[in-house]
Image (cartoon, rainbow, N blue to C red; front, side, top):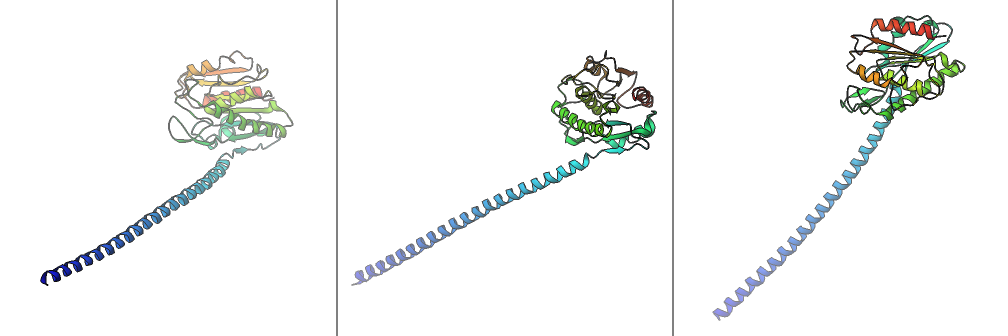
Length: 292
């Protein structure tokens, strides 16, 4: 009888452990299911959140681009100095790398003496901002520079040059309408990068312009010379100590035009990459001779 009772108690304990085991198993399965559910929900939230964040960032980027584009248009607004008397001539001027049109606002107002000053409209163009490859800096520039100084044909972006040329051509066309198609009364001018663009534009343009004031620039070897430009009047100025566009490279690039009838060279000994007072006097003399 005692053995039978002990067996019954052992059976009860065994059954009890079995029930506990089943209960724990059920709880474990329940917890596992809940954990999986939490993980799935969390992952879904993260994915959805990341997707929404990505979309928002893209929208913000688009808005930022639109704002930059609007600002870009505003930044390209030129400074215009209108003639005080009868409007007969126009000078379109381009500044150099890192510069602004404000820097040259007094150049033709007071610094360059020429007879038709009161009859001449001055347009000081503004270059767009872009990141320079060589310096990683945001700068006003007519074309990107892969290296510096400008001493070979591989250090600048010629595609940018073409874009800038088209910008200048728009102003030429506008002024030609104002001057009743008299292209010979339209002059281009610039310093450094600006001189490069004006030379390129004048020699590639369909019409013969009045002339070009090219201070410390080059003539791009990649550019064409469209039509008969032998008589195109060019003020070609450069210093033999120029550190930004070395004198030797300048000489190399202008070989095609140095014997043209209209080219006048002003090469200054000891002169660097700036427009000196004596150069401004020469510019005035050139304009007096060239403005009909």
